[in-house]
Length: 263
Image (cartoon, rainbow, N blue to C red; front, top):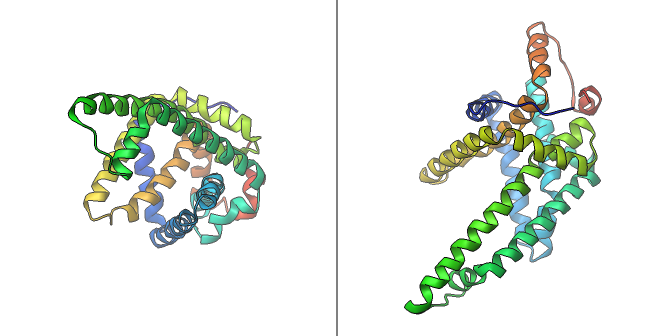
């Protein structure tokens, strides 16, 4: 199964389609995302171990949300149980993806600190002050460390973006899923640039509304990720699904996800 190339404008279309998914079950989406954020926040309150578990299980929860998107797409139903679907199926491969992401995140953080990011930590967290003769050099180190870390973070996110969906929908081993995800994102880099720019602008607008806009932003972000996977990997299936739905077909439940997806 190969990823197809899509035009840049599809990045915007993914977000618009994500909003359509949200409109199908707004209350269910809000409840599902709130539950996930509550779990993540609770884990973050546990020193060291909580953050570790949180990062490892991100692909597991994301896979569950994507399974929920699949069922919403086919049956128009979204339930909270889908959030935990990744703990019932393919848990080890999904945690493996989380582990690879964790290693990458640790390495990037290490590079950030080595290239001058430690000065930023001292300034922001410990209130350390630098005199005027040192400040210019310190700010230059912080800027270069930030840009360098960003350059490393982008390919890491590309490798992880589609990986949970490829594991649960295509039954791919985690390493192959990561490779497929990276090259699919690379092939459609312009579309993803448009996608993330628009998503960032919407996030800024959401924050300006006293954070209330995130009630819609998070569901749209998750749903648009599913749409991007479907658009790049299963465009022909999308057309067939619409045709079947027009004739009253495609009545599936969560237990059929891994059996009905094409390889």
